[in-house]
Length: 163
Image 1 (cartoon, rainbow, N blue to C red):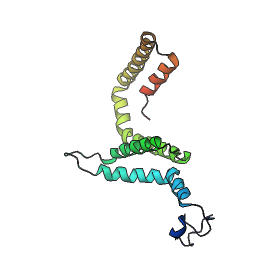
Image 2 (image 1 turned 180 degrees about the vertical axis):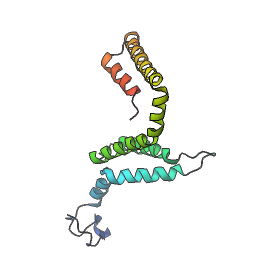
Image 3 (image 1 turned 30 degrees about the vertical axis):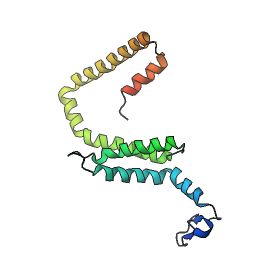
């Protein structure tokens, strides 16, 4: 358990960085590696940088919050380039997905039910046509291009997914 009343110690002469007094003199590089590979720090760093990049006006265009995904893509590229393993804690993944779905539901809820009342049969028919047409095209491409059916099935299901 960490006690936050302890003092932060930096020992430059021995090239050790010790965040807390009782840290067993681990090297500074170990702490740097731990900070880089721990999901929480990078998560908030990427979000913060993405928000800052999103505020930049480039030829009259601002990316706003969508810049976060571009910063995340860049960090993902760097992590892959330098063979750094990044593991986001599962609870963060779950909470993020739940917040995303909640937000979409809250925004789309009012218009969804009014549109469903007015055009429910048309919308369901159109959705069925889209799915069936996609399935037929996937099967045709699989046979024509010689793509394995399991791979084409994954491509088809992924193409119709929004999360």
